Each structure stands twice: as structure tokens, then as C-alpha cells.
Image (cartoon, rainbow, N blue to C red):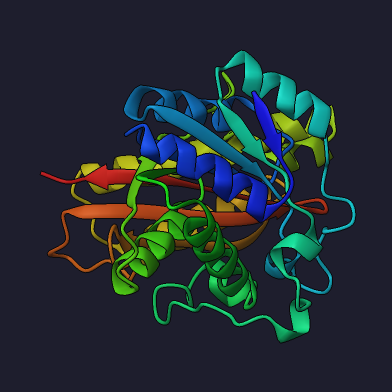
Amino acid sequence: MERFETRDALQAHLHSIRVQGQSIGLVPTMGNLHEGHLALVEAARNDSDYVLATIFVNPLQFGPAEDLDSYPRTLEEDCSQLEAHHCDAVFIPSAEEMYPGGLDNQALVTVPGLSERHCGASRPLHFSGVCTVVCKLFNLTNPDIAFFGEKDYQQLQVIRKMTQDLCIPVSITGVPTARLPSGLALSSRNNYLDPSQLETAAILQATLKEAAGKLEQGNQEFKRIEDSAKTRLTESCFQPDYFSICHASTLEPATTGDKSLVILAAAWLGQTRLIDNIIITLR
């Protein structure tokens, strides 16, 4: 597996790959890889000729009081895992390489509407940072396909809309969430949880499943279902941020005529903010 730290070296190499007629699959990550990330690599391996991963803890998507400095960084272990899963190359830029003019002078990419609810309401700078770095990575690498996990469902939909609106010729593939046997979605931030919290954290997915079951049984009292779920989370030592039943594409509040739904949830467990979702197709 080849490693690249500069844009010029990476782009020269990718040019040689394209000349050979190979398709490029991109897997953007912030490192501290787990089985969820590696599932993206496997999907890219199956759907493209050449797999490129990126490891970059993007400062632009962290708010002032968020965990940029403490975010886990495990570069050598990450590279070993990527190589074991037959990733062809990894791009490991510095912040100076990605933002040579500095963060304060960086042009920003925003997706209005879709990015303003849910996580966007709680983290107002987050999606602008995500979209900006993903747009830059797309422009730097010109992949045929890019792979993102469905755990960050709102992020996935925001990136899809950005790609469509800006006419970026990249196909976006969502990959199902990888989970522990308890149902807890794999996340780098799970590293912040102690053993007792890890056990409690699985209640978030259980609460989502319980709410989904009510919807599948025909219950359309969305507000009551949401409120009941938040009560259960609060009683289980979570501090709910949101628990929202939404149209699966627009992420607007669900209406009684909607058949494609997603329930989005975010909650604090101690000092750790967890997100998860469940996708539902009603008959």
C-alpha cells in the first residue's frame, strides 16, 4: 500500500491509474479505524479497481468546545488495517496541506436546509466543515465512487445533495452501519466510554428499534413516539439531543403520507455524544 502526504504526489499517481483505465473508489476517514470503516474499504474493493482511503482529522468540522485535540489518532495501526484489507493507497495530509491559506481564509461549502436540522442545529459549523473537506477531496482525487457509512445518515444525505447540486461527477454509495453484538453502532467516540457506559449505550439502538416497531404497526402519532423515546433515554442516563422521525430523503418531519422514513437520534452519555438511526420503509 502506498502512502501520500502531498496533493501533488497523490495527483500524479492517480493520473497514472486513470491512464490505465482503472476506476477509483474513495473512502474518506478521520482515522482510528474500526470494522465500520473497513466495511467501506471492502465495498470499495468490490465496486472499483483502485481503492484510495484518506486519513485526515478535519479541524474545520469541530466546534470551539469539541474534541479536536483529544480525538483518537492511531495512524500506524490504521495503515496496517487498510493494507490488510487490500487498500491500494492512503492519503495522509496535514492541515497545512489541506488548508494552505489557513482555516480563517478558507472558502466554505454549505448545503442549506438539509444541513440545518438535527446535528446541524446542535453543531452549526459541522456540516460546512464536512462539505468543504469532502468537496476538496473530490476535487483532489476525482474518484468514480465515494463510500460513506449510513451511521452518519444526515451527513450522507448532505454529501449526496452537495454532489448533485455542484455537479460533481462522483457516485455516492452508502454502506450499512457496522454494530457490536449489543446493537451499538461502531464509532471512534465509543473509545471514550467506560465498560458500564458501553453497556448502557446499546439502549440507544434498542430505543430506535422500539420506535420503528410502533411505526411499522401503523402508529402515526409521531410526536408521542418521539417524546416516549426521549423519556426512555433520559431514564437510562442519557441526555437526549434529538429523536426525530423524518422523511428519509428530505429529513423534514414525517407526515402521515410518508412511506420512506428514517429515525435520527443523538444523545449524550456522560461526556460522549452518540448518534444513530434506523431506516424504515412502510407498506
